[in-house]
Image (cartoon, rainbow, N blue to C red; front, side, top):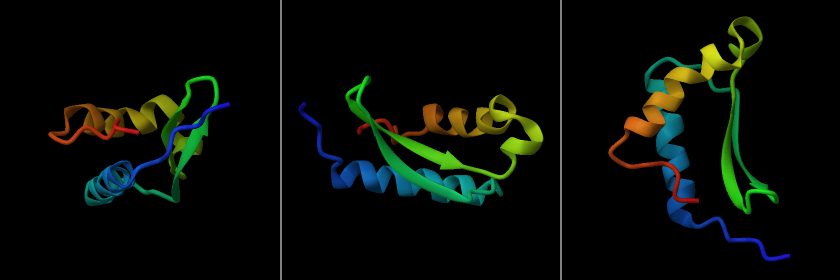
Length: 77
C-alpha cells in the first residue's frame, strides 16, 4: 500500500490553524496528523475538552468555519 508523505507545508498549515484556534480562546488539548487508509490522506485531528460538554458538532463548528474561510486553506495534506 502506498502512503503519501506529510509535507512540511501541511504541518505548518496545521500549526497555523491551532494558533488561530487558540487566539479565539478555543481550548486545544492535543492536535496531531493521522493517516486514514480509506481516504488515502492525512487529516488533522484536534482534541478539545469542550466536546464532552457541548458535543462534537457544536464544538467544532467554529473551527470548521475558520478552516474553510481561511485565506490559507489547511487542507493541503
